[in-house]
Image 1: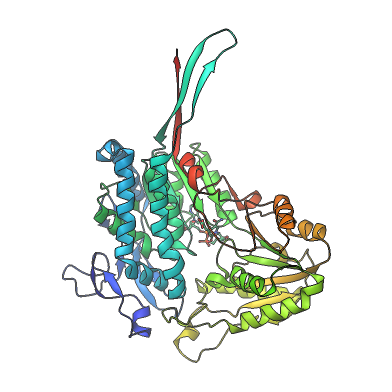
Image 2: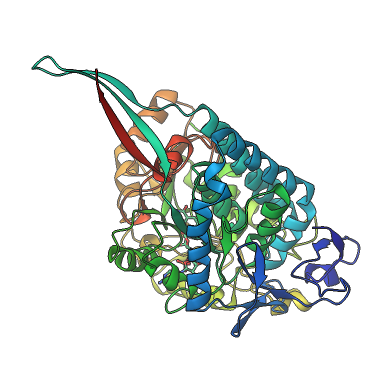
Length: 518
Ligand code: NAD
Ligand code: 6OH
């Protein structure tokens, strides 16, 4: 990698900032003419395909690049080379070598930090400050954490004494699953991809990744990091395309893919489960949410308002963990709504590459239609609009982007669709409650169960309420504060299984128990 000021669209709008864009797939052989072509990566090489689709910059609707859509043969090639790689040089990498390699991948991500940030910002429209603070550092951290963990992960062992007097030693061997299919969404593209790639490689698997069609760039850049770090060809492969009848389905249906790990919408998870069922593949699913925040009257008010502002609006509300339902104890309800409204109105919507920007656009025109249809529905369902509810006007090229106003509603019934369905935008409904019991009951009244946050100065209450939350992750007086060793996942429609720390290592490996008669 290396390169020069390049083809990413943020550049034109922000001439002051130099973006380093890698040569390989962004430029032709002379390294000068932008080819703006993002290709599949199979067996250590960039591979083209006949069918193409456009990678759109959500900040102004411009085309960033053309992307080659993998056909069935490309996906099959990727799976077969991954299978082959499992038998080759990669199989001779011991734990220490794999860990060292993962650290080198993290090093290359850090070395090409600006490049990854620029690519992520261009694809997603997220503010450069967020990509630089969250997405790219977390990608490097994902590799480092699993590099360190695999080195120290113990194996289960038991000294066995049977009732009839036999003695044995049992111990479990950790082996790779084989070829892992990885399907990821567009909201935190590199973060969520590496959250799966890193433990999969730590366990010795080979992977075929299918990033979202909306955000193909950083998965492709990662291929270059893998190469630079010395990963044998065929161990990390990328196929681009869509879901049904495209690369996503071809990958999940493929009989030689041993497991599927997926992050995305619950309905997509259900489809993938059906497809993967034919060959009895293990699945790990991180799906949608309709997360609640519960704000008690004894909370640290200022800190809580700031925390809820992040929980609702970070990444333009496009984080699976975002709070779309905020329950506030009646005594502080009016004051809280007013303070959150001021916070929302203080958020600076703008060009993603500007350092001062707090909120970028939504990912696509189609997603904006969805979010705006919920804004309309909220009004139809009788909501009071505290702030927002519409599309901002900039008077420049950003008007062609997919922006919406940060929005707060009150006054909806708990049965309203806007209180029940995941919107995935910068929007929340704030409702009052009287008792702790009522808040818990309302928060848990959902088919989802990903995350919850509880805001209180009473630590006993924090523990008590956390225990009653029907979710995979509960935060007390914080939100999205991550320790990568902890179990991460959801209940109900929010997912199957847990990833994080040993939970990831256990999903990405087969345990083979050995019993030795003593
Ligand atoms: P999505 O489900 O539409 O797409 C995710 C990925 O699945 C994409 O790569 C897509 O091409 C692929 N895909 C779609 N249909 C497929 C099929 N039939 N077979 C195989 N692959 C298929 O999700 P999205 O719109 O990209 O992301 C937003 C959703 O993801 C939200 O619901 C959000 O809550 C969820 N999400 C969950 C988490 C979590 O950790 N729980 C994290 C991020 C996003
Ligand atoms: C969803 O949009 C965010 C998921 C976050 C993680 O998977 C993580 O590991 O922090």
